[in-house]
Length: 203
Image 1 (cartoon, rainbow, N blue to C red):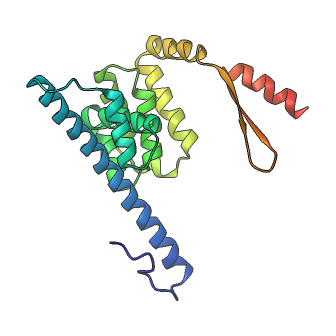
Image 2 (cartoon, rainbow, N blue to C red; image 1 turned 180 degrees about the vertical axis):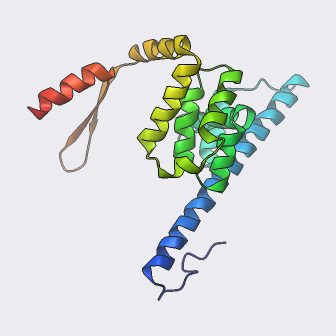
Image 3 (spheres, rainbow, N blue to C red; image 1 turned 135 degrees about the vertical axis):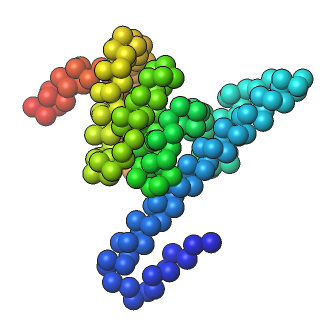
């Protein structure tokens, strides 16, 4: 088990910051291993089903992964989807996660952009974006996602455009009661419409 005070209670700021960065790399390494375990678990279930066992339910498996990781069933399904793509089709991205260059969140952003692509195009995106992971270290979340989206568009424009068209059908507005007599509103809409709303609210 890691001792969070391994640097000592009297450590200087540089040592504390370094320890924090080290622990973040440990989290990324653990996420890479969790992805491999999730895929191995699914492979076991598929093999058992082929041998006459119960049918594999992706929803149930996602729920199980979510439970093991203290996440919701929906989040478990998303983590399983990411794991499938990382382990099967994106070895460079998986290696960048394992080395700590990418966080789990950023790896998920990349796999979301690659999800609609063919296996070959996923591997091309993987090699171009993460074959040399060094430049990724200086990018923010939005920049990583945008770069993955740019490469995906160059590889298969038609598929990416179709993905965007399907996404428009999922637009929605959600209201949630918040603390202290407040309420939150979440809107998912096409970017062009969202920009108009933003400009109107700013005025």
